Length: 252
Image (cartoon, rainbow, N blue to C red; front, side, top):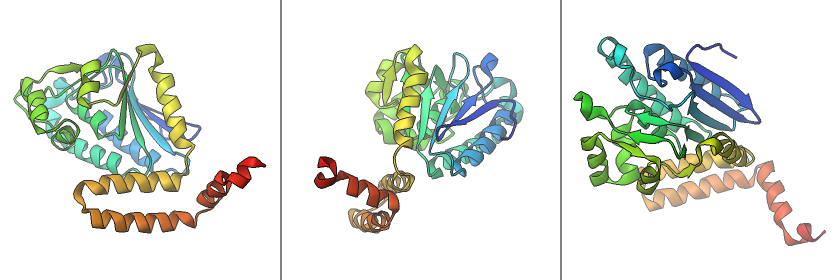
């Protein structure tokens, strides 16, 4: 396992957890953290032992976005890192779960939005704060945000540059579930374990298909479903589970 300074990596029970680890800076993004995050994602997404990936933050924040202390010197590098991270998360064959434990602002907000699912503490908040700095969303925000909340709401969130509290974020669709703060680690592990228990071939094909549907026709998706299903019918996992689900099997 590689040793990192600004991220913590743990693998247990098929779940790979990446924890942003600059709590004294609210896990703000600098060049080192971005480099380590890219490396950790490559390590975990290419591991056969990792069936689900969880991303969270150390301390009281998920990620405060760019470290303003280095933004003038390293701004372009931080934006470029966001492209690599967003593409890596969407290309990851595993489900990616964001456990949003506190404020997620700017690039940190869009790191969460790039994940497949977001479970948040009731103390979390999320915001597109870029306009406060005279900037526009990066780290995939211009792609993810309108797909989650619609264009008009996305524009309001960008133009107001406000931090949205967890209950409103849930209502808007920015997060998918809100739990009491103390329950977040256990709730995230429980959900990740449920996903990790499913046959990985089926899980990975489902993720691929649902994201491809965003830019595909119905006819294309129907053909893809046929291809994927025929591939899965031939797998030992599917054959075993189908056989086990037969009434004759259950009654024995």
